[in-house]
Image: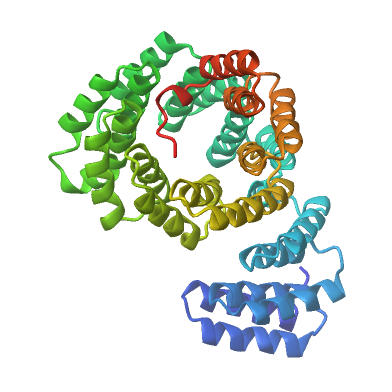
Length: 431
């Protein structure tokens, strides 16, 4: 039998102490191991694990780089360095280290999963899907990986493929609720409403205590425009519980908003935004104020969303509607400045967020307000082309541009087509 080296023995003793949460003592033994044999890679890996656990990331990086100096293709060291870079927000370095780990002989499935999560955060869903598929091929029972894959497929509107994966998940893991939820979501996306209702009914029998399926049923009622049933279900299942009510009242506000019940919507939204600020709710309240012609209050909402600073759809909407509010308040010089700066911001943002087609729509509206009709038309024509003629709002805005150009016949045709394609325009409060 081969005798254990001193470094190996010290490492083993350090691991025992680490397992007892005696981190300081464990590090003492790891240092003994380093003194006994500075070329033992395992020592530095053990040290890095302890440093990561105690959130001493700079020290962890230092010992991991020692490991790589000794063994440049060490997959475990690359994996940990990739995760540290990920935690520190350095996505480029994280991708480099994790890819090296994946390409090494370190075949821990966590590498593929972390790479997938990283690419999701980088909005590179195709690469994320590649690693999720690799992981699921090795282990079909990886719940988180399958969920992430289904979410990406839904985001790509690949509902048939998402449905197949949801069915596989139900087959492989019948006791987990997520498969039923995502099957329901994909069936809604495919407009297969009777099957969606059957799925949710089955799920509610299997998981009677899961409020998530009550939310899904509310979504179902919204989708089939049975708004009264959705409101009744909200009041019946949630209003009695203060905790649950705080979470569902946003959904009720959106329902009232969709139904055009402006006074009730306003009252509830003002309550929500004052107690529990939320970009989406502030956006809805802005639209309600616009519907009432209270543009000063709408402007306040825009400023709140911009101040919040999250680069999401509501932030960009606020940037555009801030200019509109100044316009409606007769503050023309400020409005023109805001339209110009908004158009520039949307142009830069559309390069960073290729999938955010709404940015092109806002650019078109800004150019229209600035009477740059050629650029405005370019934007809507691009949207119509890239969406295969399915972007209703683009047709509607094209109609508005034609109105400005005194082409009333085309304006009427495009606006009608926009209303026909869009589920939003017909009941939208617009500034």
